[in-house]
Image 1 (cartoon, rainbow, N blue to C red):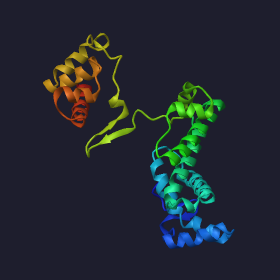
Image 2: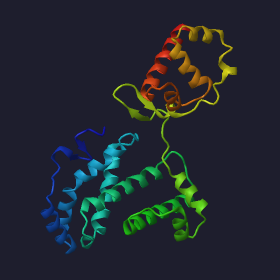
Image 3: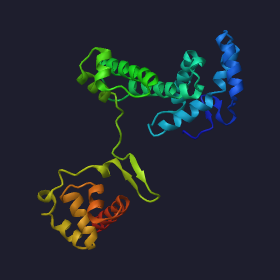
Image 4: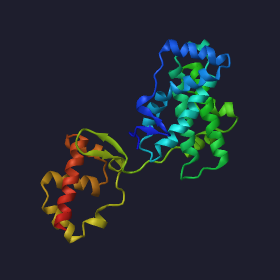
Length: 256
């Protein structure tokens, strides 16, 4: 969906691109209330919206919806941009577009968050943006809590509550071979000897593995270590551990 040419009735392959001089000229007219110049400026920056929504192409959202929300962020950026700050419009607009999309995703999240927590989180994020722009650093939790006049624990809880959930099958690394997923980074705390080793079929299947494969399976599922911990212990890359683990499990399935 993210690679389709027409989005919201707009042919993205034919989107115009404005030069810096054209942007400055149009913005001068916009400040004088020229609506036609404003429309031209919006259309000339739709490529910016398109580039931003590429970052959200793994959320399962309709690209048309994201594009529309991104355009709202673009329009807000145009209405609030101050040329006296001597920054490029794109530098100012991108965070505005991203923020608008993130607010949309949070408000439409399947996990419901209370209104009070959402309000604190939005106020915290808004203050964080203003503070960072002014001081060139992010505020501490204490500074945010002081500004909002709430306990710092409430700030932390609110910001954690609006975090987007991720799938256990979200890829976190890819070296050109097998991808490594979030679930590969987690320890298996339940699969201990008591629940596996007494199974005769499993024992038989493990005996048919190579010594290295058996060692990896033992570390991963009996001792509950992550792939990174296993890679450090046996001196190979995490990607190699992942491949060996998947091969071993495939062989075991055939033999059980």
